[in-house]
Image 1 (tube, rainbow, N blue to C red):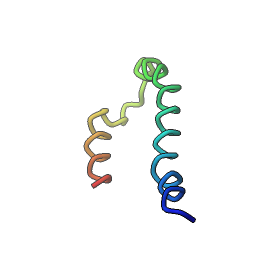
Image 2: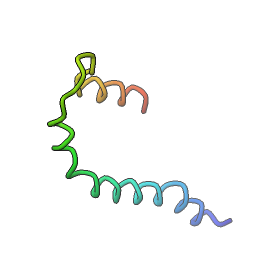
Image 3: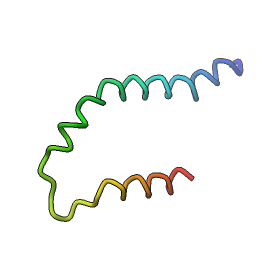
Image 4: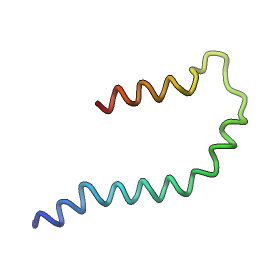
Amino acid sequence: MSKTKTYLKTIILPILIGGIIGLITSSSMNDFKMLTKPILAPPAFFFQLFGLFFIF
């Protein structure tokens, strides 16, 4: 398989699919913020910090 096809399959295609899904679901974030969350639910910044940790 050529390097271009491999590049498209492994990098560009997932980014495009993720971007499209992000655009479709971005309007539902306001609905999520309005939900009643459990007492033991961690705050939002918790996920941002640990998400950054797991990426690197």
